[in-house]
Amino acid sequence: MTGGSNRQLTDALLLGPLLSMRRQQVGNVLVKPSQADLLVLKDLCEAGKVRPVIDRRFPLSEVPAAVRYLEDGHARGKVVISI
Picture (cartoon, rainbow, N blue to C red):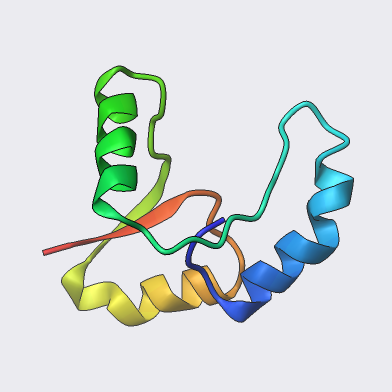
């Protein structure tokens, strides 16, 4: 997990062991990104081995609603703000 609110981090830490009993595992990763890491990630994305999950898109005029959506813990992927 990278980014997110304090609530999401707490939920991941507390619920992670329970969720990992299912087929899909949840883990926590705290890293300082480097250019080398980003290039590896770029290569994986281009090869189709990693695909970002976009949960929902909001227009710029609805940023407050997007933040509420994140803080309420509804997002199951990335929330995108369209400009």
